[in-house]
Length: 432
Image (tube, rainbow, N blue to C red; front, side, top):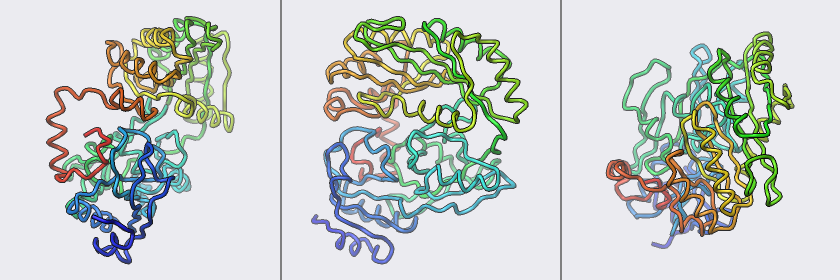
């Protein structure tokens, strides 16, 4: 059917409850331009536009601030983008209970700025400053703080959803010890907007630490890095983050790659507590690791270090791939990256949660080599859950973003049919 902003607002009953405009080049996803962008002003208005789109069989993509729209398969067609931009309020902060309820369009950064006034925060670190709460839940995005605090899924205690049949439903509650309703929050975490629109969420919070510091240790060989990670993991130390950054040049097992790209192996260990406890643990970890090169970052320098660390691989050219591994297999993971570098990549980088066994790999190479690298990772017994989060559209057509779903395929399709019978959500970008 012909769609214009005026037709959409009138036909869906959203006059006075939403704004809409014709999509432009900036709204395109992997080069595919939507027809109309609609901005509802309430959860009920979001549900109304989804119900209308479902009746009309229109392909819909849900959008917060668009920081991760490049994630997923390349869509063949997009009719509507439904954005949560106008749903951006912190609706409740029960500071005595350490919980907060926030609308999906608010950014994680804005939420934490408001919570900080009460000495609290949502301990989620995101790569993009403009990442919204709803988008962060939808992709279950997490950073170095996952080592101590887990992922958004682990901190979520309640969720409110706009469904494709026009209903607004709620699951969970507003307190940590809660058993009300089905645990839809965990189902929505990592669903990539394929099942319903998240319109608000309730989280358990944490007190802001009084002090923090990070030891940054550099090594010349991957074996040294692996030994350092194992030493921290088996100690009595309690870091809030234990991250590695590995860069491997072609043909390189050590510091110098034959293609001119240097290889490096870095460990970041962060502690957060009172100043006295932080100082003691920094001294202890420095003695434990006894690295040839190390430094301690604090205050603004520490914040800059972690920002640069989160952005290191995700902001550079090439394919960006999420994957997991057994924490004890770090050395084998580095060996796999070296193999990929020797196969023709300019460089291969890893930013990962060493204590958890999860992170992202970036492969800088020609498109054919990027595809082969993805296939090699999926064929390996060392890593698992290999998902391409960013790549050239040509790479996405040659190597499926999500990979084989295996025995779970039938279950995933059944869940999709139950929540989105008309199949309108996410424009076949996946994962279901």
